[in-house]
Length: 356
Figure 1 (cartoon, rainbow, N blue to C red):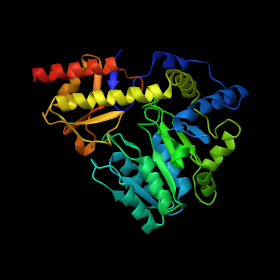
Figure 2: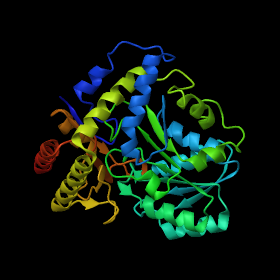
Figure 3: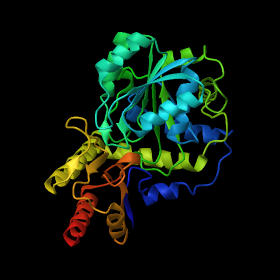
Figure 4: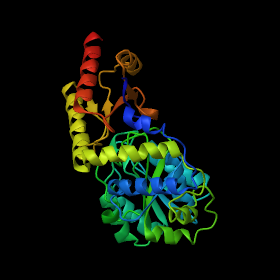
């Protein structure tokens, strides 16, 4: 079976793929409502919340737009240290919000003190932060950032994109004071693309009642009305929810602590290999992702040729993102990836290096 070491979409276990072949259900039926309810309950531990969770037929970017439309009438602060923080800012501006970009170098984590100072100065309704920058492999200190925002401006909502980290590393939404936490299906959850998942705090939902022009598809008040009936406003992706239900059984059977430890150890293994081979690590010590490693291409490898070599062996990695293309390459170690898989990949890359 081919194995993709790219930061999404990732490989999906055959058992989970098979779950999608179950017969369709009417989405306004008691059977679907039972499926939806039990699936949502199973996801609660990975969010670290006792609150509401929504499942949408969308990518994670759709839920970035949901945050912008529901939580800001005018002003929002976008923390940017990578491509997806920048995307969230673009989503805000294209929705007509006054979005200030608080920019850091891509290889630098978002600094909680700098965020706090900006919040004190700007009186923002919400702050957006990407927890795990898929473009760089930098994991931002979201717990510390949320605490700094709350101290500087208690009313400001904290919105977090955990697209490439939720389900692979520990996130405690309630304990950390996160108001909106989003992810999508095709990364650490190891599902096919197509589902967005978000948890929303009470105070965030209350604030949304004051915001006009929330749109329709991602109006959280409409989603909440239907959630209370274990349903969705529009037709859900029934097959993908079957798959999510099955995959959550598998994740919980593995155990979250074991899953998080597996991801952490895989990250260490890849980073040690990179340094041992004379490459560099793009993310600084202490802020390195446990789900995707961005390797500085100090040997000037032809990343396209490397990927062609790997694809002939049923594997694939990712080139650097945007301005980092060819200057870096990315190795994902998320989802169902095991130590033996990483060992096979690194052996193949070593073989390529020895031949070039």
